[in-house]
Length: 198
Image (cartoon, rainbow, N blue to C red; front, side, top):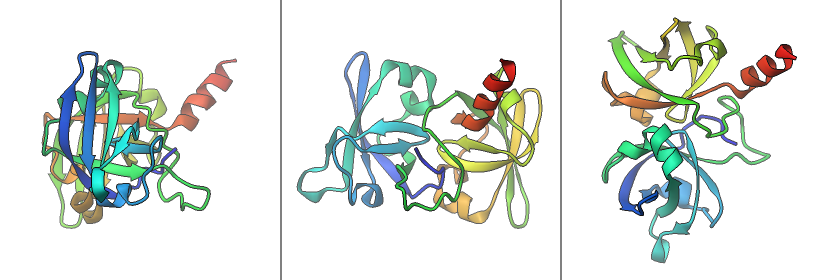
């Protein structure tokens, strides 16, 4: 489980094509400081398992990414040098600064537009059909692993306001219209829907 509060902006070191999977190596000094085999690290909102850590204290980790994940998230479009949002799994003593994030991507969206303001930027993101029912104004959504507050929800898109800190410390500061992002809706909304349906 994660909080959606990005710990650092890492970078892709290598992608080794294995046919039905990719072995992804990522550089991130903060998240690898105490990383062990089997740990979970969120990469652009996708929960990945540490398969190896860098040799001789090198601040990298490698994870195996299955074809299913490559097909259903934006990880399949990564290339060496790409910036990625990184977060370690929460611990019982971690502050829950964002919201409950599983790292299980529900779908991908596309950056539709960016509207800068004096102190923040409003970003519109397209929404896959069927996910709009889980979003409410002032509710939470995870975009590329970042816990954000929804401003408005439409039938096919939603907006979020990004503060300078988010723009500076995450990949959303550089994402442009047309680029794909990973989306995870609030898991509590999905549980409520299931219980109400019964």
